[in-house]
Length: 321
Image (cartoon, rainbow, N blue to C red; front, side, top):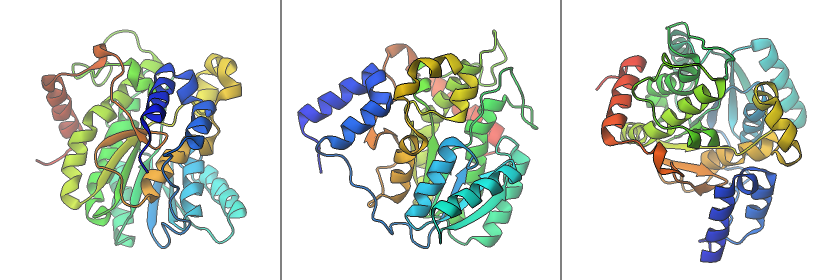
């Protein structure tokens, strides 16, 4: 169902004003407007395997639960197995009969990602989807086991390496990169992807890595489309996640009453995996609607910058031509 022009205009105004568009207010208004995309069928993912990284807290738990409610066999990919086991039991208690499995993987450690992908490939002949939800916001500049800035390793390199290793299993499936509206505040830093220059800021590092995600989206979507994989990125709006609670306490104190809950933040991720037909390839989404990659001209990257970032990504992730 297409949205009438006045609805599209209202939606755009809410999106640009942030407080209206990114909070629970925006989602509730959009759901009530004509043209809200239909929910996936109740059994849309019955018998299909879906991986969710960072599935032991916040949006990851809500995403896993939403996918399980659609019948998926959900694979919770976590770094802390004890914590993940408790989450699995909690979801199983809320959804009796749900098919859930726990896997350990440190998404920021590329060797561990390759080890994990090898184990998964040996057991799962077909994977319908991966939701790359794992996230970090280190208070100080930190590096992964391979020496990459940690936010970039977890948000960009790990997801790319995992998807690349599982391409045969993902044929015809879907990949979702969970980004952030914070990326709108940053330009692509192809000149300093590892954040080696200037004073480190946790929020800037986080937003830069999310900017890298969306700038590389079209290139990754084109690469993986050779296996008929649909690749999407989305941002959840302002959700009351553990990351917000721990890393942005002042922001949370000011916005707590209108922050989204985890299920509201995860809604578009679940929809992108379960909707039929598959969404258009290589698009950026919020509240089930395609969104622009930029809202201010100063964040627009030139082709040379994008090519330089792509060259860095290919080298760091070990992608073959």
